[in-house]
Amino acid sequence: MAIHYTDPQIDVPPGVDFHDAKQAGAWVSACEVGKPWRDPMRQRFANLVSTLPPGARVLELGAGPGYLADFVLQSCPNLESYTLLDFSEHMLELSQKRLAGFEAARFVKADFKAQDWHRALAPPYTAQPVRALRSQDAAEELKGTEGLKVIPPSLFLLWENKDDEVIED
Image (cartoon, rainbow, N blue to C red; front, side, top):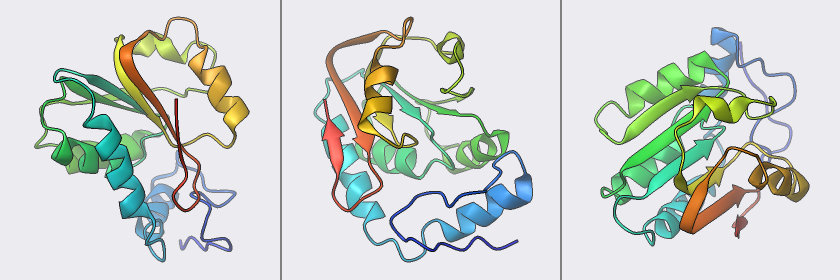
């Protein structure tokens, strides 16, 4: 199965079923093609996370195959933990393979759009890179999630899937 992007700015074209191993694998094969803005964006995230004190704990929502985590963990070796949360078992398997050499990597299968998703976590966290939201309104709602504790100094980073657009809060 091939994934075809009609808009190179979007991260996931409509209709991809990440619960299906073939579709998830096809997306991973296609997701980096023609997107030269991705590595500079990952570097921006890593630079921001590197400003946190040693021992910081990062939570990435919608982590996919672990590309962002790989970038951040290579750049920020003093993190206590980097938790990758994704609803797709296939994406978590790919990220576990990619990040096997990083002791700080943690993996959680949960859907952050579900009401009790945060129960699978071990807060507090110091940074939350979020990639799978489609609007600033959704980000505001997510930040208010009861039971998700974030300690200062903290970062809430939203990847808007556009050139050079990281919203830092």
